[in-house]
Length: 115
Length: 418
Image (cartoon, rainbow over all chains, first blue to last red):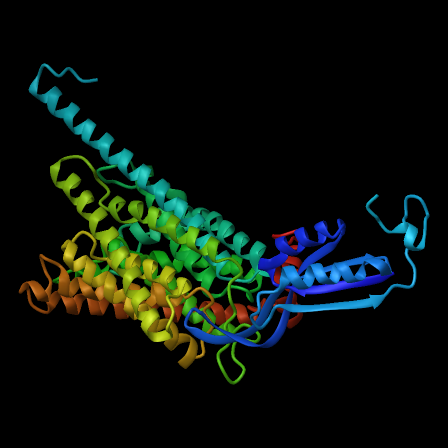
């Protein structure tokens, strides 16, 4: 089992969701994140000029069986890309164990798979 | 109804109908001015941080409530009672002696009450995000019960400024209401010190948590101003009154519009971007500035006054924040203090009946200057004394931890957003 996390542009979220759905990944968690980077945006508030390096992105996260990792990654690579700097990152990490709470199933069996 | 088949009966009926029109007008505009409290609440809530929203809403609610009570108990008499030495009116405790005039005494009382509360509520914005709530309660009572009525008496109650050979002219209160509030706020802000993190070698921006609230508040205030200025005519019956209130509607609106444009263009040139937070203040700057002369200047005069007030506002905010290092989160001292004083002075130049630019000499301008300086000295002095007393008794400022984590939780035990 692998956990796939990706930081993507907020504007690409719908496309990524659709591409993952087409790759049979129907369940994922996501949240809006703020990060810090080199890009600075000038801001003004009531006559005080200041910079902010805040960058807003969406983070998605889901766990898949090892055999599904490649197609999930490809789906994200294709759907999240614009070619501009700042398209984001994908991180993959091993997951030690997983349980489905309702049934008590564990391991691969506990992960959703399309029949 | 009277018997209108006789001349006397007809005359009495006509006069009663006129009183009805006047009274309805005054009560209706009093309600509009009351609604400005909502405008102030939204402007101040929007321009400050989410952790202090309960506190700022509470302050706007209670200053109106204590202000109404205090003005009824003592303030009205000090302002409109029989003149004593040109300085104060004879106290008229609990409005027991009433008031004599062309509209019912209580119509006049309620109209003046909503004005008194406006002066008090201006202060809360300047001192936002760090003032002890109990201290705020005390000073809002003192402002509407004593400080505002005394200078109000000089201007509107028959006091010395209205007895000058060329009387001081402040039609609806650029000085009497707005400057008084602005200057008291400035004194308080100065004694209170800046919010934590506002100045550390440089001036930092502390963005307000919701500019949508700020914008709604400004629209509500603009709307309420159509009561504030035209209502101050205190009459609507007859051709001269209807012409006057229609004229005041026009000058009020033109000055607000010009103030908006003035601040927009100035901020755009100065900071490179059209800044909403300053442009919203510009609308208010134009409104505050036209309030003194809304009856006396021409529509073009109103545009010039509003435009200059909008430009002045941007420089004033920068001066107070960046140069004087005084932290006024909503710009109340600039909008109400500086632009109120400016608008009052402009009456001496732009008044079509007394102004210098219309060939009437310098006397009016000098009267305006005396009034502006005297009221500023009174409001700053009395405000300073009041806040100094509070600072050394119950304390003016909340603890560091309370300020960092928000007044909502520590002072009120309730968060605005859950």
